[in-house]
Amino acid sequence: MLKWRPIVGLGAALMILGAVGCRPRPVPTRPTGTVRVLCATYPVWLMTRSVTDGRSSVQTERLFAADLGCAHEHVMAPQDARRLASADVLIVNGLGLDDYASAAYRRVRPNGTIIVASRDVDRSLHRGGSSARQTSANPHLFASPWRYAAMARSVAASLGRYDPGGAAMYQRNARSLARRLEGLGDDFRTKLASMPNRRIITDHDVFDYLADDAGIEVAAVVRADPESDPGPSELIEIVRRAQRLHPAALFVEPGSGSRLGQTIAAEIGIPLAILDPVVQGPEDPEPDYYERAMRRNLRTLVHVLGRSGKP
Ligand SMILES: [Zn+2]
Image (cartoon, rainbow, N blue to C red; front, top):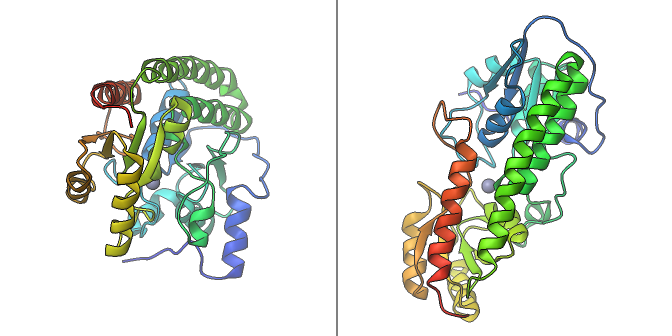
C-alpha cells in the first residue's frame, strides 16, 4: 500500500508548514469551467457542501470514506492520491489534524490551492499531555457550533477569492449557516447553565472547544493520544484524577472507545453516554445533519448532567 508520511525530513516539514498556514499562501484567482473542491475531513466537507450549495460549476467531494472518523494519522491509499491529483482546491481542517492530506496534495498537485478552514478561527485551546506533539493547538474546532460557524465564514471568504463569480453566493450561504449554528451554540450555553454538575470526562480532546464555549469543563480525557489507548499507569492516573474531581459522566464517541469507557466509568461509578462530534456520518446526509447531531448531543447532555449531583 502506498504510504504518505507527513514528515519525512526537514525539507518536507518546511513544505508542509508553508502549505498549512505558518506562511499563508495567497489564494490565486481563477477559474473557468468546473471546479473540483476536495475536503479532507467529514465536518469540513459537510460545511463546504452548504457553503457551495447552488453553485453548479463547483463539485464538492470528500477525500476519504464517510466513516474514517477523527484520523489524526492516516495511511493514504492510491485512490486517495488519484482524487487529490484531480482536485483544483483542497480544503483541510488544519492545525495538524490532516497534514498528511496537505502534504500528499502538494506532492501530486504542486500548484493546487489549499484552503485551511481553521485559519481565521480562534484556536486558543491547546492539547493536553506531556509530549511535544500534544502541546500544539487543539484542532477540533468543528465540534463547537460557534467555531464551526467561523470556519464556514472563513471557507466562504477563501473560496470567494478563488472563484470570484461565486463569492456572493458563498457569503450568503455561509451567513445563513453561521446564523443557525450560532443560535444552536447559544442553546447549549443557555440550557447547560443550570446543570448541577458541568464537569465531564471525554474519550479524546475532541469536545474541548464545545465545552469551553458552552460553559462545561472537561476534567480529563481517556486518550491523550487519540491514536492509541492509555497504558496501565495512565489509566490509574485518569481514574484517580476523576475520583478527585467528581465528574458527572464519561462521554464516548459513536463506535469508539466504549469498552474502555465502560471500564473507567464503572470504576469511577459514573454514567457512560455518547456524544457525537460529527467526525463521521452517512455517505449522503441531509443538509442539516450536523445541526441534528448537535441537538441530539445537547439533549444527551441535559439528560445526563441534569440527573447528576453537585460535584
Ligand atoms: Zn481528534
